[in-house]
Image (cartoon, rainbow, N blue to C red; front, side, top):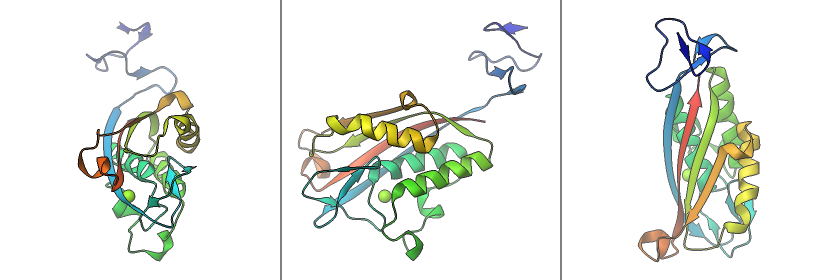
Length: 185
Ligand code: MG
């Protein structure tokens, strides 16, 4: 039969549209994952979000560089791949990961995806912070993360929101991040 203009072998028709790839000649499976992380503010540390250093009086306390957005993204990717979570792959009890640039962790996660014949379709991320304002840094973060994910920046969306003063983020105690990622294999 034909679905979306492509000949689809019998038995591979999808009720959700055409998931048959004429390029790789196999049926593409889509896998979704979500991630969440939160870190508290600490003095004397740089603030790094989405791989970008952001001018602010406080950074985030962590075993690594505290990039809460990258950590949420790693968990979304690992979740979609069925590969556990960031703590399992990069335990915070290991000196190997002390102060590590979280982009290194992200690139290792992407390498794990490649080993399992999976690639990123897109990711949608939300940073929850009362301060600082992040609008001017969003595009830079997209480009950095897209580079590590080996996709176009248009496939990485980043949103920032406050909680209007409510909760730990609203009180300025820390920053939280949510991530959703879609993979295909
Ligand atoms: Mg973390």
